[in-house]
Amino acid sequence: MSNLVIDCQNLGKVYQDGKNKVEVLKGVNLQLEQGQMLAIVGSSGSGKSTLLHILGTLDHATTGHAKIKNTNVAELSRNQQAEFRNKHMGFIYQFHHLLMEFTALENVAMPLLIQGIKVNHAHSEALIMLEKVGLGHRAEHKPSELSGGERQRVAIARALVTKPALVLADEPTGNLDKQNAIKIYDLLNELNQQLHTSFVIVTHDLELAEKLERSVLLDDGILTEVTHA
Image (tube, rainbow, N blue to C red; front, side, top):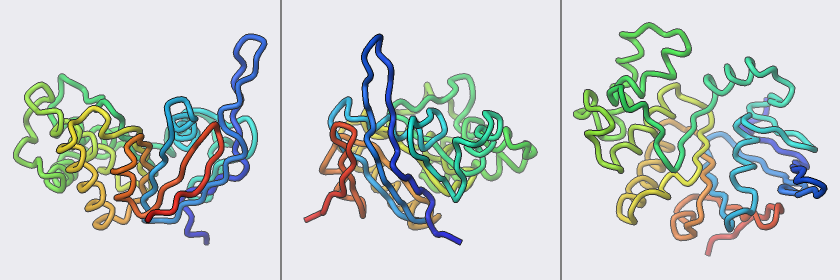
């Protein structure tokens, strides 16, 4: 069986803007092995988020296909896609998107509860993951009682609590200062080593992208490999 978590072949995306067609992705080919960390860099409007949304089954390609864990996700029904996301993927965004009325523990446990796991077990697993990101002592705090960096670490714990094969992160440090941004990237690297989870991280920060083992550049819809010095 293939060790590829991602296998994109000739991926294209075209949006219709009135009478005009906007080609956002142009024949993108991308493979990612289990446990690899990949940065996608590029200027605003280059198609980075569109590619991430297609990989996450939140959008669909116009041409080509994207296979995640040997599954052509575009062929799944909406319900099947939602189940696939919950089982195999985690998502981290620039803004944490935590539920403000729930504690850190409850936020992290949410994906497990959606899977039908019993509350006690879900909370136990959530606490383990919060401890991995250094926030076990803040488990009962609500997001309003946490700093920006802490909220993002809670969001990372939530993305990883189901032990997904793949985590998709869209500018996960874009809302943080430089010091906290470096801490978050160091944390992602550490969790990658511990859990052997694959990460795809969209970022505009070239310095931070160079911390990852592999980078690709998306420019005007065309994807090219970046060689680190």
